[in-house]
Length: 96
Image 1 (cartoon, one colour):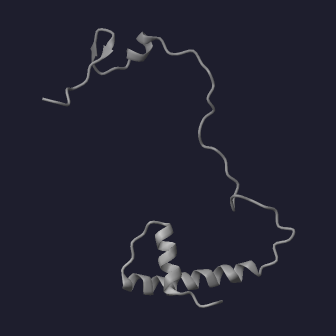
Image 2 (image 1 turned 45 degrees about the vertical axis):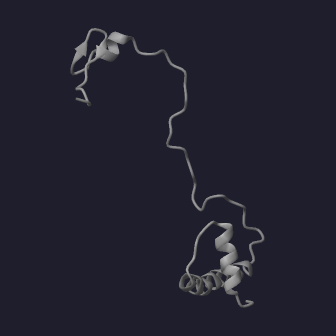
Image 3 (image 1 turned 90 degrees about the horizontal axis):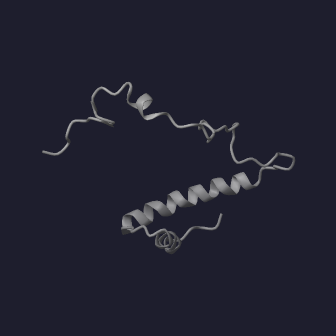
């Protein structure tokens, strides 16, 4: 791989709005070069016949579906309230 210049690192840092010291720019030049070398290695792998996927494993939603149901009646909602004040929940004050 072509040698990565410190100006390239500073350019990437500027694009991502990251401030770098001179020491960080020098260190990250080496680290970014290593990362790009790994990508170069990966690009040589023959992936023909491998199906495109967004995830390595099956993904399923853990959220419940948004089904329309009848709302609970107010008395049913308040039935298990520890404290009530008429038709409302009674809670401790949070401000003095």
